[in-house]
Image (cartoon, rainbow, N blue to C red; front, side):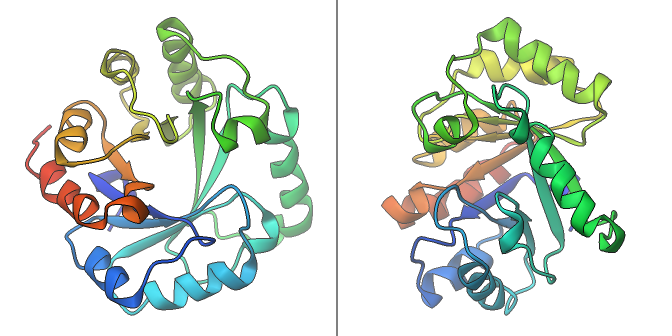
Amino acid sequence: MDFTTWRHAFKLDPEKTVTDEQLELLAESGTDGIIVGGTDGVTLDNVLDLLVRIRRYSVSVALEISTVDSVTPGFDYYFIPTVLNSTKVEWINGLHHSALREYGHMMDWDEIQPEGYCIMNPDCKAAKLTGVTEVPDEEDVVAYARMAEHLFKLPIFYLEYSGMYGDPKIVEAASRVLEKTHLFYGGGIRNGEDAKKMAEIADTIIVGNVVYEDFKAALGTVDAVKSVSR
């Protein structure tokens, strides 16, 4: 399934444990995609293990790349974040340049989709890793959204609240200025009600931590998102 038609996706962390039974329920829940990605402890071995297990099912699967060492063939998509509000150049274009020097000649560009990341929780691991020290306000987010679509022509703008539930007004402000770029929302989705509220605004809802905290609630987010028409 083309990622631009995704309304719901689960994000699974290769460092965390999900049983085979849980993985089957996730893959066959009606979700549009599974994203494999995390901040800490992402290795080739645990990425491969998760990929092989997911590939038993027909669901689309993407690798969100945080380290080049964990990249492996077999995914439908490779999402490459560029952290637009990072204070460290390596997370904007530095690591990307290094990867292209080494592997650019063998990349399948139809599978690669860059994401314009805007990290909204300065206390999360991703923020600390990438040097995000301040919370973007609504005007900042609108500017980053316009940057993603009009300056960099990115296919995805990802508002990442990472563990905290976002401000719907800010998500709505980003949505209003995006026409071609696809809006991903992730962070703090704890139940179907949370998911449904954000699904009324964003193109794709990413559900992550709750998979490991309240599995039943995580499964309930699929129908909640799919009940919203946009």
